[in-house]
Structure formats: C-alpha cells, structure tokens
Image (tube, rainbow, N blue to C red; front, top):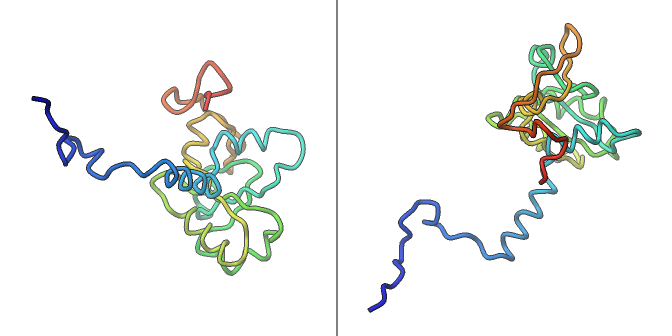
Length: 162
C-alpha cells in the first residue's frame, strides 16, 4: 500500500500553495518595476554620468541630518504632494527611500509622487541597508562610511552574485 499525500501540508509555508509559474513570473516581473536594490542604486551613482533617476530621501529633516545618501534630494513624505513640483522634474524617474524595511514612508512618498504623475520606484532596505552595505553616507558633520555588515553584503567581493 502506498501512502497518499495529505490535503494540508504539514508546514505553514505551504498552507497556501505557491502561485503557478505564469502568475509568479507576472508578480516578480512587476515587482522589479516598483523596487530598486541598494547596491544597484549605489552602482548607478558611482558610474560616470547621470544615473537616469533622482534619489529622494522621504524622512524628516532631523533624520536627514542624522545621515543620508550623498546626492539624494530631501523631501519629507508629508510634504511630497505639495512640494514635489518645485523639486523634481516630472520627466525624470524618482527612487524613494526612508529608514529601512520596517518603515513605509518611502512607499507613501512613492504613492504621492505616482498620484502626481511621476514614474517612481522604492529603494529596498532604505537608508539602513545603504549604511549596512558599506556605502558612503553624509551627515550634518560630513561624510562617513562603515564597514559592510557581513550578514547583508559580500565582504570579499563587489558583487553578491545575484
């Protein structure tokens, strides 16, 4: 006698089965249209010439002063709808960031900008992962850099292989 698979998986991971390959491809393809990776943003800023987008820090002034990505534009989420037209060219894509993965300020700023007609993405990981991956940051005291966190970035290579 052979055993039959149970109707309900033993582990919560598969209580809801994975999407079909076609649905998964559509979802993940769309996700890339909405998100940018910290290391990809850093590589675009490090290359010669225009990166092709504006990087927007959507945190408060106090948070901006505490540290931000050099070259970013500061526009707090709460002011995005009323001040975006004064700071941003609608023809240039915008990549938003906030503190980190536990903060949705960049998502709310991206929504406000999209509603104004901007093409926009969100930088995954926010400022937290920018710093954790060892990229240069700027504070009211000047520029700094921390060693890359070996749990979030490759330490012996410039390429994570993904």
